[in-house]
Image (cartoon, rainbow, N blue to C red; front, side):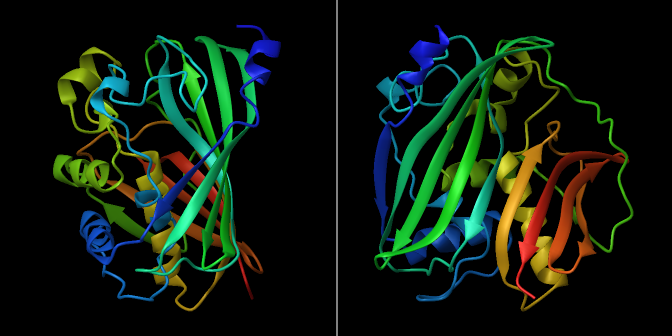
Length: 276
């Protein structure tokens, strides 16, 4: 498809309402081995990814478990989908048990030539609203790549950390997170598919879960700090069940550098800005 053809997808929008049900939020907490918020409590950073989810019937899913291309998102047949990164601004916390909605709009579609073939980059803007007030804005970067062996080795050495937590990403943890985020992508729970169809050596840890755990490690190390914004990106996949570390350092006043590392190199990295 030509660039002009991709441009026709820009501006497409959809809305998803959610009651931020306490029972479901308790299951998100269990999937992350975290305390569950009570009714009216603020949600921890990035827990909205387990909410505001537009589900589809089986007939509208592709072989990889994702929604078929050509619905809300552009068609990219025979390519593997990855959540590459994004940027968020936190205006005020979403609160448990209070109805809200998310509006999603495609704001960018670009095709580029990479080392392993063509890459299609799609940027989706999400706006999360509760009680008529905009709480979170987000730009999510999705990339579709032609089938090729995934990059598994890191090249950026791990910096010195001021705080660190170890994560054991068991298959049960990955299955639970897939369930609470209604993520059907089979690389996270179907090992034969992950290894034989997409070329991974095992089950793949969810990028959104890694970002959530990086933020949680910051929050635990700095209780009382209020996040203002986050930018994050994935560098390479992490494979279950090998442990990895979520770490970080304060780089300047009000700015923290976060990362996930394994075997001495970075896998994911982020910059979190917070109020001082």
